[in-house]
Length: 453
Image (cartoon, rainbow, N blue to C red):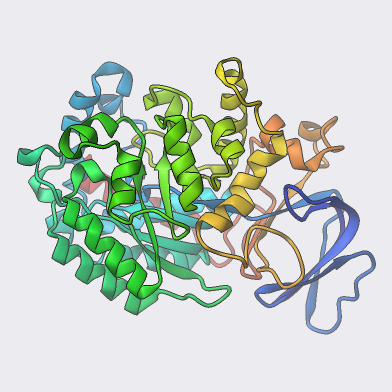
């Protein structure tokens, strides 16, 4: 299908590019064909009246844990009521009870919320593989992504270090390095689409250094480089003293020593990094996913985005999982990220980046971190991944002069009016075309009730 978005009030082609006013945008299958005034629809093209609409590149989510949607907003898991160790001892046994169906329906839940709020590409860090749930959890996530038409980067994670050797992971969630690598290879063979506009890609993503053997990371690097896929893990969220006690170096240096760094690698969080560690990441080309909303809850300090940006580190944004962020709304994270940095500005050497930079982290930055040159901007030849906001509402009076800063500064508190992914409408007029949301809700709630009560 091809679409002509007629008379767009504004097209934000990129966070650093000029905003185009009163233009049309024409798609051709999965790609954008043209942007400009007075475009000809031609035969077989559906015309959409975009009067009053702002069009943006689709948001790119670079860190999430979809399965955690099944443990959100539960009083017994409130961080404010217990220490971190108490919380881990409480929540991991719950994670270990999840079934294959739980992982599927939790993924459906997260993906739906992301798409409703303008996200067109999402990476999920699926590191929880309870023995009872089997090994086809990522397969079910791909199934969910294909149902919605979401561009999906599947992070096949693992935990290999037992609690008896210093991890926080119950035995029921542990795997061996060989099991992990074998399943990574299977998933790459089955689903990885490296070509432009590929809808599914696989990432080798051991959970975090504190919960894995050294060999798990070494062999992950070997496999990923051999197969031409990316690497991801958690770094810089308070674990560096533990890594230093075990290995004589902090986490960034430890990962570099294993080869787990470079342009094909990105880390999640990075809120405890020292200046020399930021410099190391910039020098190696390693990217990062900033998850602003968990900082409110579990971060000991606010991630120094100005320093990371000034050093040239590739920055992207992630929603993170519901263990530390109870929503899956990356649009909200763009606003949170900007406001959080404004709050911490007085303690920083570098100024807060301009508001539009935060939209850039969630679009072009995400594309860069995920190794993609086909998404993150709106231009001829790029993927037809976008979302639209109808600004003819009282919510937007006084904001329309600066579409780039609208989301980071003002925030968007409702679902978008349309989400287009790979040239296909995934969300419009309050519905997922061809899907029964009420049925999806009922099925997910039934599985949740059976498993966790």
